[in-house]
Length: 490
Image 1 (cartoon, helix red, strand yellow):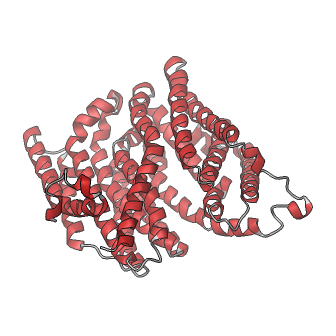
Image 2 (image 1 turned 135 degrees about the horizontal axis):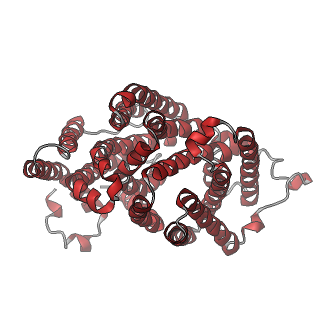
Image 3 (image 1 turned 180 degrees about the vertical axis):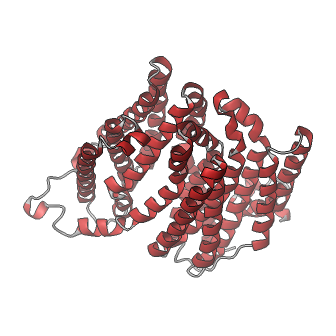
């Protein structure tokens, strides 16, 4: 194996570890807070917090114009002035906040606003505003290549989130308001920390000041041309991901939305693990794009990626019932009926995200938007058809169908641009085993159920462990390989 190719794998591993360290505390916190939220909040309150979070996620790319994506892209390029980049990004977000404030004033008394966000419109405005600025400042620190500071900021933000949750939810029992305040104040602390630690005010220059005007040289136009096309794609994925919650609220009420929200808590473990890798994969995919070994690099990484996802998903399904009993509050135990299907769908969500990186690398944003649109149409259509008929299960079916179809389409389409290979049979067999396990979680007697689940997990492990050992051989130093004596058999 060429040294350059080996460096690519080691770089991917190194980047994954760095991002994992930077986000580890927040991911652990998310796991801890599940028990807090499901233990303190009622079904309707948890459903409302889920709707508020989804609305905020919809508003964030619109308010910010996804300008933080342009900050990291242009900020890492030495040809551009970081002061101008930071000034433009702040100006864009402040204008977006002003427009959102006006929209909330106009729409405040509409019935549909109260149905989905209650009386929390003002707090939602603050939530979106602070979150936009926090994302910008954290991204700008990354663009300055202050990786350690970025990681420290993540840890501090996690600490403040936990502290404020205890204060507002446990001590003062402020419910939904306390949930939102906890996030807002933690993000505000993050902004203040980054602002004073790096003296970020030094990077903000007055605009419209003759030759020093950061808008004079067309940089703003270039940044907006880069980031604005990303908005529709993000919104389409948000529609796909959040239409379940809104339609369950519409047809079944807020209590059932709370059950659906709780159903996602365990599947989100798989998403969390993948995202630690996904951030590093985006960087490695770009840096390896011009490599002679690019196609083989993609082939090997996807093979390991799918193997790890299938093994973790099978492990989660094996323990999902006892994990739900211990981790999820008593009021939300029915979530175990739907969580297995969502674990199954999450595997394909991660696969689809992996394929989406190819569009980023090859600058095929239209293909990304088109496939995202297909996912949205499938998800919404099946929700409209099935949720009124079979309830929350309809939302699970729509999510599975949307992501499997889009994964197949992206496999065919994306490989036109980067011709990486993968075993269709391996995907089919793993998927079939995972599907049987997902169905078995809530079927049969306890003995037969766990026999099927255990056999399924062992089979998935046997199918997938070899490629993981091969990758370990490529990445691990020779000294460490001695501690894994069977690694060189493959």
